[in-house]
Length: 326
Image 1 (tube, one colour):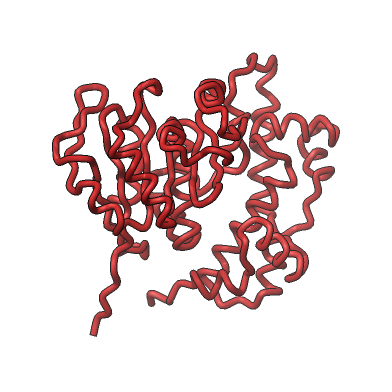
Image 2: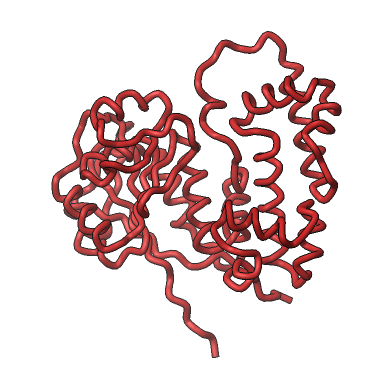
């Protein structure tokens, strides 16, 4: 007998002025049935104060299929960014967000959606971020918010905020990865033709003068490709720098400017991601996974899982191991 599995309930919060791009990202991640590919079932609802179509820029409109009364059923609420950050969200929407947060529901805002959470008073005294070009505006209008300067996304008190545009995809995939495992997030990412996760911060995208030489960009890309193909080897920053033809100090500086993170942090992030996949897909023992992913020992792997994922490799396997499809 087939066991029925309840779909995870997701709410897309809609009101006039929301960005069509963010609506599309949310719909692509949670509104497409990928259960045949092993992704959990999602029930995505377009929630608004009333059933009237919600207007967006460019002559687009979004038709809600639920009102705010449905929000208590949602396990996750997504707030799109805004076209005009000076326009306040309707008070019924803000009140509904306050009630949802009081219930303990996870709420995630994409790009300028942080302004909506701030208007609701939910970000007072908390860490948050938005697009780098809007950081000063968010600080000025909501001085009680601790605005992060350059992350891709942050979480504080079950409230998630993301930097601009493409960082909304990063946050959505991270939320799927956290709740349902790396393989589910990777499957969705492949469908979107994007990376399952990006390391670094939005500092790499802040406007700077164009470098005089493009050679460094090509060399760093080659070094990163080499590192990904040899994660199981004892790679060091000095060895990677030598491969690039730079001194370790120069290599670290150029690498951080290009990726928004240090070479060591980038390498550890990809090693953890590789271990997540092996934990989900295989029955390999922990020491072997640690060896293949370049951690050297199970103890070291466990330490990095704890610091980056807040869990242990064994607990992660218990939660996200994929049953064989063959």
